[in-house]
Length: 105
Image (cartoon, rainbow, N blue to C red; front, side, top):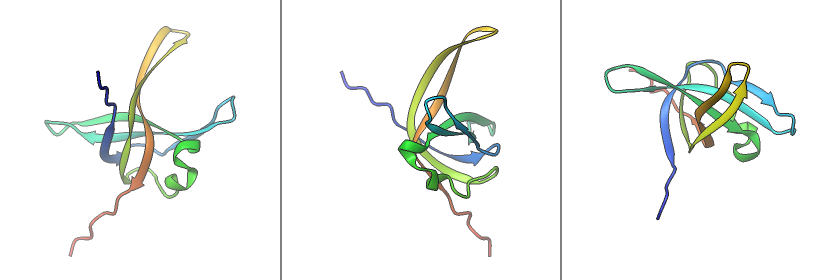
């Protein structure tokens, strides 16, 4: 059986990226990506960009409202909180690139 888990998304950064340091010392930047869905709705997707994998330089200059291209994998995490067991499906990026906005003439 062959399994493929590849995600390529082009969308707009919905909120300013949040940089965090984990207890292990690893650094991650979390952002929400708005991707157009059928029917003109925007689907907000959480994206985790691990600095050890992608590099901090790839995130330089990316802010709310910027168009970006993200490629990576879908990952589902399970955790416990005060409200009980929860799960989160997110994109773990292996690459991210800020897209150029075409200039109208």
